[in-house]
Amino acid sequence: MAEAKEVLLSQSPYSELQHDTTSGTVVSATPARRRGKCLSRRTGQRGSVYQPACPDGWNPKRPCYGRVWIDQPGNPERVRHTVSLGICRTKTVARQRLQEWIEREGINTKEYFQQNTAPTVTFREQAEAWLASLPNRRRRPVKPATIYGWRTSLNKWLYPIVGHLPLAEVGNAALKAVVDKMSAANLAPQTIVTHTRPLKMVVASAINSEGEHLFVRRWNHDFAGMPIIDPTKQPRYRLLAVLLAALGLRVGEVLGLQTDDFSSDCRVLHIRRSVWHRKLQQPKTPNAIRVIDVPEQLAQVLREYVAGKSGLLFCTRKGGPLSYRNVVRAWYASGASCGHALRRFRTEQLRRQRVPEDLIRLWLGHAAQSVTDRYAQGLSEDEAWRQRWAETVGVGFALIGLHGVTNVVSIESVRVA
Image (tube, rainbow, N blue to C red):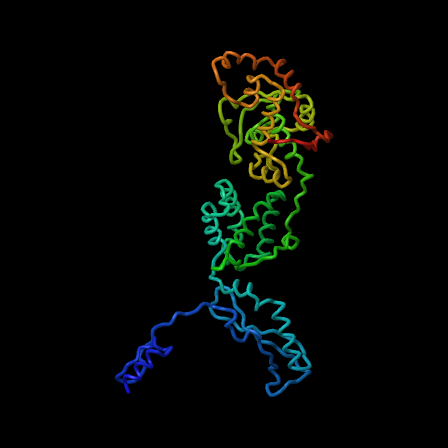
């Protein structure tokens, strides 16, 4: 008989329990694997209604209340929440009002459940984990320069304001606090938009084991006071792109241009410096220190633009160099080409017009290729000869809107191979 009991016990679903055959009592239990939280196994999610003043019946003239269990970030246990439902004629009406409130608040939705039962992590912790994953991910790994820009936004603006907040609390109110702080510092609209992008990406990077977003956000830019970028009010980017395409400059060189780098008639440009990480430095190579001849068509625009100015030709409100990343982002937003694509365009134009190779290397800042090239360096001192070729080649595209000192200049068409 005892053997039969042992066999039955071994086949029982409670076989994990250790049984003392001498006393016939359960003395200990092997801890069973505890399942994680699941919304489908929750009880009491529909809530209950009651009237504190009428425990024995329903009074249609007295106020009623509803109680429902809700999850809170960082709290392992649910918390009972009380909702005022007002005066309801019947208990059924009160239940309907409570269900409407539950649906309106979304406390029984999958998104709300995942967001409030996820492990507590601060914005800073999630941001650091997100940055560390960017260069090694399989799909679209991020380049170091891009990561550098995002880290700058995090360290300078986002961490001091929202870095200590739990990630679940970083929403539109936190975004508004960041925008207000930047606006108070008189940052430009484009700068504010640039610095707030990592905030949204960090929140979106939090996912569960199924790859679903833990914190789904509907960003309200009107509530946050996010500025609107008007490309028509940023003509400097247009003229900057024109100089790249018309003169074959490098981006760092054009960002380092100063008004005194031009001759009085703006027909000759001296390249003396470059910009890297918003700091002035020497050009890329010794050959990059050079002169470039400007066609009269473009010189007219430059004379208007530099009139009454001093210092950097393209600068921030405080007079410092522009950020290369901000410039490139503005061009991409408008669908334009940038960087070396425009420099290659200029090279093709010079070759099509059969410009002497000595002059092409001078204008582009390339080194001599042979002893003969070094012997012919005296040609670079013949300004009249250089400018005849500059007028022959021109800029290679049409300039439109040459009016006023704001210089609203646009490239009508540039074909880049």
